Length: 148
Ligand SMILES: [Mg+2]
Image 1 (tube, rainbow, N blue to C red):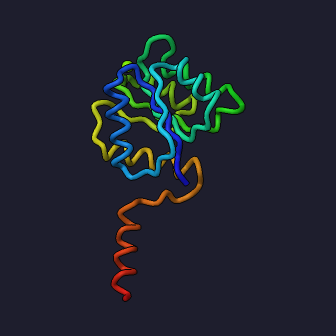
Image 2: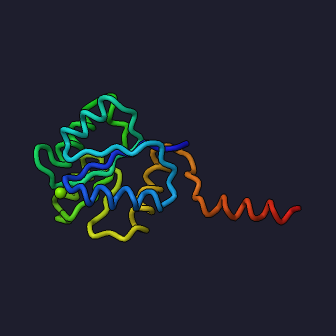
Image 3: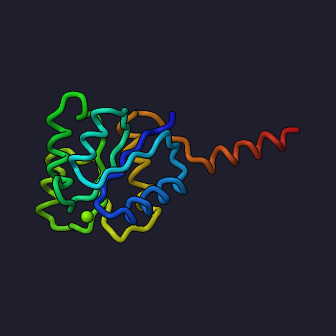
């Protein structure tokens, strides 16, 4: 299965960095969608099937916490796991996000392995299936070759 991923951040550069990080993580991606704030994200969610959302918190128009609230209050959207990628690390805000049902949390600046780890765990939890790590399938192909 390939996952449709929505990246929400008011920084176009950060959206690009997150996309690249997800690409190299090996998670099978169907389509990438991008939004600059929560309102834009909701429009995309209205018109497209999204499997997981990676969102900033501090954004103009509608921030990540408000976006998470909208998603969790919507019968059609609340199934979608939301991962926050943010510089905001205040305990109070993290606790609020957890209470609201955020699926994962990554602080900026991040190491690519951290996003990779959180994303795999969230996808496996949300979709109850082992997300295949590409290096394993490469190793498997190698084994098959040796059988000849
Ligand atoms: Mg921001």
